[in-house]
Image (cartoon, rainbow, N blue to C red; front, side, top):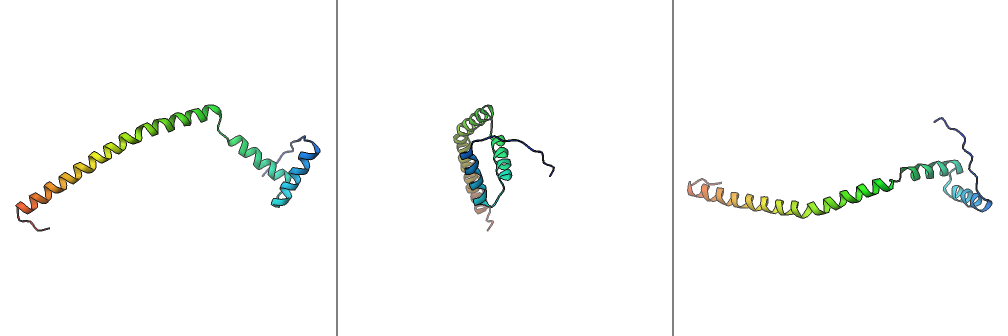
Length: 95
């Protein structure tokens, strides 16, 4: 991986905490900062969060309707099965 230098200014207390954090993990300060920056930049924007919330709302509204539809389908299948069993019995077909 080709890297480039980025200057990061902080106070002595934060620098010491960052160095201790990196050392406890057996990683370099640079790696900790790269990973932190990647995670930070991967966070969704407010717009993306709003879109996701809208999608969750739509899904939550749709689930009861889907469940009702599945219940109706299951009942239709049960009735069809009963009708087929009655038909086979009537015709003397042993299954």
